[in-house]
Image 1: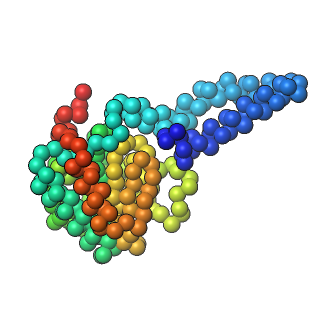
Image 2: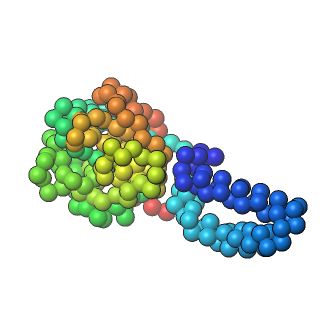
Image 3: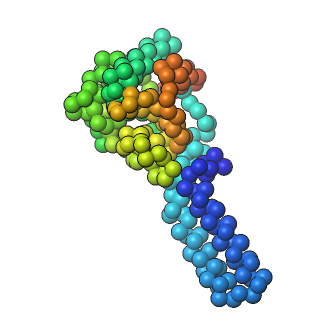
Length: 238
Protein backbone atom coordinates (compact mmCIF):
# COMPACT_ATOMS: atom_id res chain seq x y z
CA UNK A 1 0.00 0.00 0.00
CA UNK A 2 2.83 2.39 0.86
CA UNK A 3 4.46 1.81 -2.54
CA UNK A 4 1.18 2.38 -4.40
CA UNK A 5 -0.49 5.27 -2.59
CA UNK A 6 0.03 8.79 -3.91
CA UNK A 7 1.86 7.60 -7.04
CA UNK A 8 0.68 7.14 -10.60
CA UNK A 9 0.11 3.45 -9.75
CA UNK A 10 -2.85 4.50 -7.60
CA UNK A 11 -4.61 6.10 -10.57
CA UNK A 12 -3.86 3.12 -12.81
CA UNK A 13 -5.28 0.68 -10.27
CA UNK A 14 -8.43 2.79 -9.98
CA UNK A 15 -8.80 2.63 -13.76
CA UNK A 16 -8.40 -1.15 -13.72
CA UNK A 17 -11.07 -1.49 -11.03
CA UNK A 18 -13.46 0.61 -13.12
CA UNK A 19 -12.73 -1.57 -16.17
CA UNK A 20 -13.39 -4.75 -14.15
CA UNK A 21 -16.66 -3.25 -12.89
CA UNK A 22 -17.79 -2.38 -16.42
CA UNK A 23 -16.87 -5.90 -17.60
CA UNK A 24 -19.01 -7.53 -14.90
CA UNK A 25 -21.89 -5.10 -15.46
CA UNK A 26 -21.87 -5.64 -19.23
CA UNK A 27 -21.98 -9.40 -18.66
CA UNK A 28 -24.99 -9.10 -16.34
CA UNK A 29 -26.80 -6.77 -18.78
CA UNK A 30 -25.83 -9.00 -21.72
CA UNK A 31 -24.04 -6.20 -23.58
CA UNK A 32 -22.00 -8.66 -25.60
CA UNK A 33 -19.95 -6.24 -27.72
CA UNK A 34 -18.97 -4.09 -24.74
CA UNK A 35 -18.19 -7.20 -22.70
CA UNK A 36 -15.95 -8.58 -25.49
CA UNK A 37 -14.06 -5.24 -25.70
CA UNK A 38 -13.55 -5.05 -21.95
CA UNK A 39 -12.26 -8.62 -21.72
CA UNK A 40 -9.82 -7.93 -24.54
CA UNK A 41 -8.62 -4.79 -22.80
CA UNK A 42 -8.08 -6.69 -19.54
CA UNK A 43 -6.08 -9.41 -21.32
CA UNK A 44 -3.76 -6.92 -23.03
CA UNK A 45 -3.71 -4.73 -19.95
CA UNK A 46 -2.04 -7.43 -17.87
CA UNK A 47 1.06 -7.18 -20.08
CA UNK A 48 0.88 -3.40 -20.41
CA UNK A 49 0.63 -3.05 -16.63
CA UNK A 50 4.06 -4.62 -16.13
CA UNK A 51 5.56 -2.04 -18.49
CA UNK A 52 3.73 0.98 -17.09
CA UNK A 53 4.43 0.08 -13.45
CA UNK A 54 8.08 -0.87 -14.04
CA UNK A 55 9.47 1.86 -11.69
CA UNK A 56 7.09 0.86 -8.88
CA UNK A 57 7.83 -2.85 -9.33
CA UNK A 58 11.57 -2.20 -9.33
CA UNK A 59 11.23 -0.16 -6.17
CA UNK A 60 9.21 -2.94 -4.51
CA UNK A 61 11.83 -5.57 -5.39
CA UNK A 62 14.64 -3.37 -4.08
CA UNK A 63 12.62 -2.81 -0.91
CA UNK A 64 12.29 -6.58 -0.36
CA UNK A 65 15.92 -7.19 -1.29
CA UNK A 66 17.18 -4.78 1.34
CA UNK A 67 15.55 -6.85 4.06
CA UNK A 68 15.02 -3.82 6.29
CA UNK A 69 13.35 -0.46 5.98
CA UNK A 70 15.96 1.94 7.31
CA UNK A 71 19.67 1.73 7.62
CA UNK A 72 22.16 4.14 9.13
CA UNK A 73 25.13 5.45 7.20
CA UNK A 74 27.95 5.64 9.61
CA UNK A 75 29.95 2.87 11.12
CA UNK A 76 32.69 3.63 13.54
CA UNK A 77 33.11 6.38 16.10
CA UNK A 78 30.23 8.71 16.87
CA UNK A 79 32.54 11.72 16.85
CA UNK A 80 33.26 11.27 13.15
CA UNK A 81 29.55 10.92 12.40
CA UNK A 82 28.76 14.05 14.40
CA UNK A 83 31.54 15.91 12.59
CA UNK A 84 30.02 15.01 9.22
CA UNK A 85 26.52 16.01 10.33
CA UNK A 86 27.84 19.34 11.64
CA UNK A 87 29.69 20.00 8.38
CA UNK A 88 26.61 19.27 6.28
CA UNK A 89 24.17 21.25 8.44
CA UNK A 90 26.51 24.26 8.61
CA UNK A 91 26.92 24.18 4.83
CA UNK A 92 23.15 23.84 4.28
CA UNK A 93 22.51 26.77 6.64
CA UNK A 94 24.92 28.95 4.62
CA UNK A 95 23.38 27.81 1.34
CA UNK A 96 19.95 28.77 2.66
CA UNK A 97 21.06 32.21 3.87
CA UNK A 98 22.90 33.02 0.62
CA UNK A 99 20.30 31.32 -1.61
CA UNK A 100 22.82 28.93 -3.07
CA UNK A 101 21.20 25.97 -4.81
CA UNK A 102 22.27 22.57 -3.49
CA UNK A 103 21.29 18.94 -4.03
CA UNK A 104 22.83 16.41 -1.61
CA UNK A 105 22.01 12.70 -1.84
CA UNK A 106 22.74 10.31 1.04
CA UNK A 107 23.18 6.75 -0.18
CA UNK A 108 21.69 4.02 1.97
CA UNK A 109 21.34 0.33 1.09
CA UNK A 110 20.58 0.89 -2.61
CA UNK A 111 23.87 1.62 -4.35
CA UNK A 112 23.82 4.69 -6.60
CA UNK A 113 26.82 3.77 -8.74
CA UNK A 114 24.93 4.28 -12.02
CA UNK A 115 24.13 7.88 -11.06
CA UNK A 116 27.59 8.50 -9.61
CA UNK A 117 29.14 7.62 -12.97
CA UNK A 118 27.30 10.55 -14.59
CA UNK A 119 29.37 12.94 -12.48
CA UNK A 120 32.92 13.19 -11.17
CA UNK A 121 34.16 10.64 -8.62
CA UNK A 122 35.68 12.42 -5.61
CA UNK A 123 35.70 9.92 -2.74
CA UNK A 124 36.73 12.82 -0.51
CA UNK A 125 36.49 13.61 3.18
CA UNK A 126 33.32 15.57 3.93
CA UNK A 127 33.98 19.11 5.13
CA UNK A 128 32.00 22.33 5.14
CA UNK A 129 34.58 23.92 2.84
CA UNK A 130 34.34 21.08 0.31
CA UNK A 131 30.56 21.39 0.14
CA UNK A 132 30.87 25.14 -0.25
CA UNK A 133 33.29 24.75 -3.16
CA UNK A 134 31.14 22.15 -4.92
CA UNK A 135 27.95 24.23 -4.86
CA UNK A 136 29.60 27.63 -5.30
CA UNK A 137 27.75 29.37 -8.13
CA UNK A 138 29.86 29.15 -11.27
CA UNK A 139 31.84 26.11 -10.09
CA UNK A 140 31.94 23.29 -12.67
CA UNK A 141 29.99 20.85 -10.48
CA UNK A 142 27.46 23.17 -8.82
CA UNK A 143 24.50 22.30 -11.07
CA UNK A 144 24.59 18.55 -10.41
CA UNK A 145 23.95 16.44 -7.34
CA UNK A 146 26.47 15.43 -4.69
CA UNK A 147 26.25 11.77 -3.66
CA UNK A 148 27.45 11.02 -0.15
CA UNK A 149 28.26 7.37 0.53
CA UNK A 150 29.00 6.48 4.13
CA UNK A 151 31.51 9.00 5.48
CA UNK A 152 32.76 10.22 2.08
CA UNK A 153 31.59 12.65 -0.57
CA UNK A 154 31.61 10.01 -3.28
CA UNK A 155 30.67 11.86 -6.49
CA UNK A 156 29.61 15.38 -7.53
CA UNK A 157 27.96 16.90 -10.58
CA UNK A 158 25.72 13.84 -10.92
CA UNK A 159 22.59 13.69 -13.08
CA UNK A 160 19.50 12.27 -11.34
CA UNK A 161 16.22 10.99 -12.80
CA UNK A 162 13.35 13.49 -12.69
CA UNK A 163 10.21 12.55 -10.80
CA UNK A 164 7.22 11.42 -12.86
CA UNK A 165 4.80 12.54 -10.13
CA UNK A 166 2.18 14.76 -11.77
CA UNK A 167 1.04 16.26 -8.46
CA UNK A 168 4.30 18.16 -7.87
CA UNK A 169 3.77 21.90 -7.56
CA UNK A 170 4.60 23.88 -10.68
CA UNK A 171 6.62 26.24 -8.47
CA UNK A 172 9.28 23.55 -7.98
CA UNK A 173 12.09 23.37 -10.52
CA UNK A 174 14.39 20.70 -11.87
CA UNK A 175 16.48 20.48 -8.69
CA UNK A 176 13.47 19.49 -6.58
CA UNK A 177 12.13 17.11 -9.24
CA UNK A 178 15.53 15.40 -9.46
CA UNK A 179 15.79 15.12 -5.68
CA UNK A 180 12.32 13.58 -5.51
CA UNK A 181 13.02 11.34 -8.51
CA UNK A 182 16.03 9.61 -6.96
CA UNK A 183 13.96 8.75 -3.86
CA UNK A 184 11.34 7.15 -6.11
CA UNK A 185 14.02 4.85 -7.53
CA UNK A 186 16.02 4.13 -4.36
CA UNK A 187 15.99 4.41 -0.58
CA UNK A 188 18.22 7.51 -0.60
CA UNK A 189 17.66 10.57 1.57
CA UNK A 190 18.00 13.91 -0.23
CA UNK A 191 18.58 17.46 0.99
CA UNK A 192 17.59 20.28 -1.36
CA UNK A 193 18.22 24.02 -1.02
CA UNK A 194 16.28 26.28 -3.36
CA UNK A 195 18.35 28.74 -5.37
CA UNK A 196 15.39 31.12 -5.72
CA UNK A 197 14.07 31.19 -2.13
CA UNK A 198 16.71 29.51 0.07
CA UNK A 199 14.05 27.11 1.39
CA UNK A 200 15.45 23.83 2.72
CA UNK A 201 13.60 20.67 1.64
CA UNK A 202 14.06 16.96 2.28
CA UNK A 203 12.96 14.09 0.03
CA UNK A 204 12.53 10.50 1.18
CA UNK A 205 10.49 7.54 -0.11
CA UNK A 206 9.03 9.62 -2.93
CA UNK A 207 7.79 12.35 -0.58
CA UNK A 208 8.97 15.94 -0.34
CA UNK A 209 9.01 17.89 2.92
CA UNK A 210 9.63 21.63 2.62
CA UNK A 211 10.34 24.63 4.88
CA UNK A 212 12.75 22.78 7.18
CA UNK A 213 14.99 24.51 9.68
CA UNK A 214 18.60 23.60 10.40
CA UNK A 215 17.74 21.85 13.68
CA UNK A 216 15.33 19.50 11.92
CA UNK A 217 17.96 18.70 9.29
CA UNK A 218 20.58 18.04 11.96
CA UNK A 219 18.24 15.73 13.89
CA UNK A 220 17.38 13.74 10.77
CA UNK A 221 21.01 13.33 9.75
CA UNK A 222 22.02 12.23 13.25
CA UNK A 223 19.31 9.57 13.13
CA UNK A 224 20.57 8.54 9.72
CA UNK A 225 24.20 8.17 10.77
CA UNK A 226 23.82 6.87 14.31
CA UNK A 227 20.71 4.65 14.23
CA UNK A 228 22.41 1.61 12.67
CA UNK A 229 25.85 0.73 11.44
CA UNK A 230 26.90 0.38 7.83
CA UNK A 231 30.20 -0.60 6.35
CA UNK A 232 31.81 0.91 3.28
CA UNK A 233 30.56 0.62 -0.33
CA UNK A 234 32.37 -2.67 -0.94
CA UNK A 235 30.43 -4.39 1.82
CA UNK A 236 27.19 -3.79 -0.09
CA UNK A 237 28.37 -5.68 -3.17
CA UNK A 238 27.09 -9.30 -3.12
